[in-house]
Image (cartoon, rainbow, N blue to C red; front, side, top):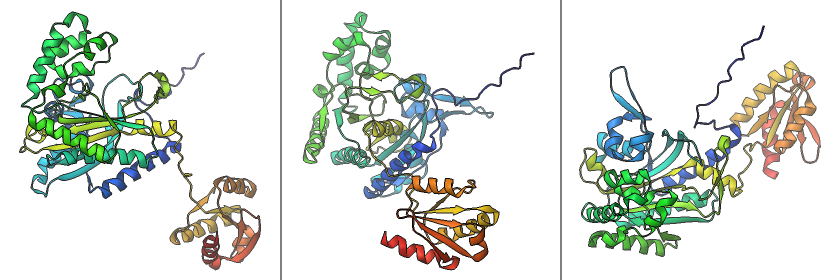
Length: 441
């Protein structure tokens, strides 16, 4: 009689576990983001993972791919429509309005770090649950604020040890001059409608700017000769963008103009930018579907969104921000061989033998912890030899050996892991003796 095989449960498609060996990268990113946020004057904000669906329809845009294809939306028992957040900015702006930050000194500078959710085919660094950090400067229309965000993004990547990064910039204009560009773009593509892909044929009607974002091969020759947003900028938008480029030059931040950069969200105005690695080819970080990516993957991007606060029920409040994909950054750190310190920074290893030795070791562990001496152990290992082998792999300076005899004598053996010299000292003097020896190492 055959037995039915037990189904092995796995993480849902497009999600993954952050395993212990990868946590060192995540901790590095968190620390760098936190420290630079403090240096640049940004305060942490955490918004709910679920929000009213209408927030993203209004904020992100009814015709965007996010709203049309990618949102995880559901109805509650009370018939409310909620959505797992696909991006961070609308929730931050909702909180800004709801919590009364509108009355705070401006600009209000906020940052976040957390998971986002989008339903799409997992590929090339795209996950259905993915993580982003983002920075928002709310209130302030000066070009210098746009550039400070680009500078901050670059600073974060530099502090993470990443090299060969480039910034792409463009300007989409404002509500005064963008309609002219849209008309020019639509007229250009309508006369070539039979030569473009089905998605672009739809975009002509519902979201013309996304025509410049198409990756289909048959659309590339047509896209190359399409009208450029810079040719339609009004005097104010032209001067704003000119100032942005002059600031970037002054700061020696490498960039190049990408006239077809439009970003995928409806709320952007004026400056938009993306940050990319300079790489001939990148291997997909999606382990289960490893594939070569012919083009590098964007690490993140952002821009100015001067009308979003008003769109969500507040006053006209010029603002700008950016978000970055943490998985992509960590993958690039690994690909570029960024060196990180060992996860264990313990200087001392606690070796025990026998039940009495274990009991006394646990008490000694607490004493060392209170003395702020970082200590490692392997209480489940019964052999001194196996424990010392672990201590050697961790690279600790000293091992403390506490066996049955030492437990009875209230003593501890201090072993210098480099020289192999051992000395027995009274238990009450161990902490002070260790501090002296560690200070000399």
